[in-house]
Amino acid sequence: MASVLLAENQEPGFSFENCRRNAFLAKKGNALPKATKTGTTIVGIIFKDGVILGADTRATEDTIVSDKNCSKIHYLAKNMYCCGAGTAADTEVTTQMICSQLELHRLSTNRDIVPVVTACKFLKQMLFRYQGHIGAALVLGGVDNTGPHLYSIHPHGSSDKLPYTTMGSGSLAAMAVFEAGWKPELTEEEGKLLVRNAIAAGIFNDLGSGSNIDVCVIRRGSVDYIRPYETANLKGEKQMSYNFKKGTTAVLDVKTVPIIIEDVVVHHTGESAVESMDTSS
Amino acid sequence: MAMTEGANRYLPDYSSHPVQHHFSPYSDNGGSIVSIAGDDFVVIGSDTRLSSGFSIHTREQSKLFQVSNSTVLGSTGCWCDTLTLTRLVEARMKMYEHSHNKVMSTPAIAQMLSTMMYYKRFFPYYVSNVLAGLDTEGKGCVFSYDPIGHFSRSDYRAGGSAGALLQPLLDNQIGLKNQEGVTAAPIPLKRAVAILKDVFISAAERDIYTGDGIEIKIITKDGVRTESFGLRKD
Image 1 (tube, each protein chain N blue to C red):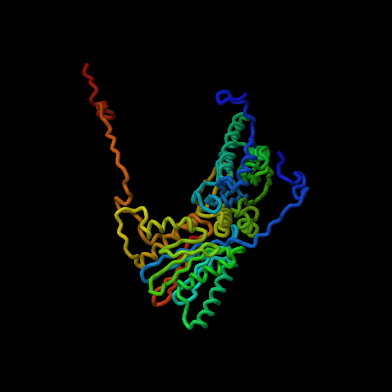
Image 2 (cartoon, rainbow over the protein chains, first blue to last red):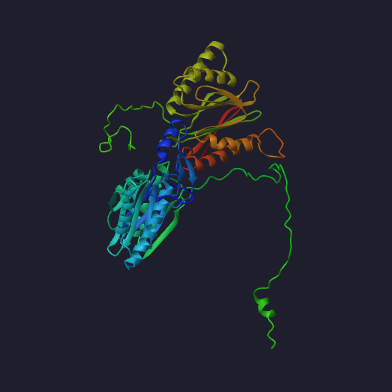
């Protein structure tokens, strides 16, 4: 017997009880509201001294832009960052959960740096457990004691270990740039430029990606989180001013509630307090 | 509960009963149109991006078709239907000129376009039309249509993919709705063009199908003048 005060044991994972109800409602014409997806171009490359991650900054709700400058490169550990594409809430929460899991793991294994493969394992085990219902497509990059590593992780829980990778709706545009321009042992400047070009290809050729380019450079011992690396798109200059004169909004009703002052107490603080202290013995 | 009805979960491409496949004859190529009418002019602008899905076909396709010296038709939606519809309108206008020995007036074109679209009531032109021109008295007029030909005359209209984003802005700035203490005055040409550009700048911020640039046609008794303006390309 379940009641509000004494809830039954909550089963872990998703409850699919409402799916039949939702299917019935959808058939009647009441479609489910669309979750915010990021539409997105995210990329990662391995260069001579580490890993460079890049992302655009547009979040879309179907075909409307909901955030013109959202952050898609998420912190996992001081040596690891993760770009997220797919459902915005899923990428945000998944990376935060694995971030805390990694810190607990680091403390319990008494290490300074957690291997990147550990984060990959945590992420794919969680995503596989949810059988693809968590719509998070991730590009995980970091540098540990064995060198730089880059993984791409898909919503169903598979991962690929690669020297360069792209995800999101703009991944084809970005991968075209990588296939033409990536080579082993890139310098940091060459790498940043290549990542910038790949994200720009996604921003200008894919309608789901846009606005600015964020870049994150991870080397052994240091991280450069450059946000924005480039503001590739500025809002057009307005031709007119749209300031409204005072009184433009109609006032329908006015209710004034005076604040009644019951008592006034003055406390002196700072130098005057020290001065006013009576030190005469 | 079955994971997916019909499809075998181990062989998702095979199912145990017939599956209906659906071919859609329509595609949505995006684009927005805005038109503002004044006392002796009318301006109509469209963005120049043609897209489908998440890809761009071209950044330089205007959706405005000048059908006569005093009328411009803006058509957006399914581009194939747009091309055929405008071709048909131009052909019908030529026929009218040959039989009546005069150019069709804007209200006449408006009525004809409505009947042409209703002929395809049961396989519609998937097009959002805005017809702008000078009427027989020289006043600016804007006619807007639904896909099966219902039309109405108004002073300003926004249509296409960003229509729902822009119409409330036009209602406030041109229709002076929800504003106290403002006197209705005939809108000057400079202000109409400035509002048109600003309205497209805002549309390009939030609608992924609007962007790249705009083409503006300004219709006065002296003819049709064209202006271009750049927009965000992302």
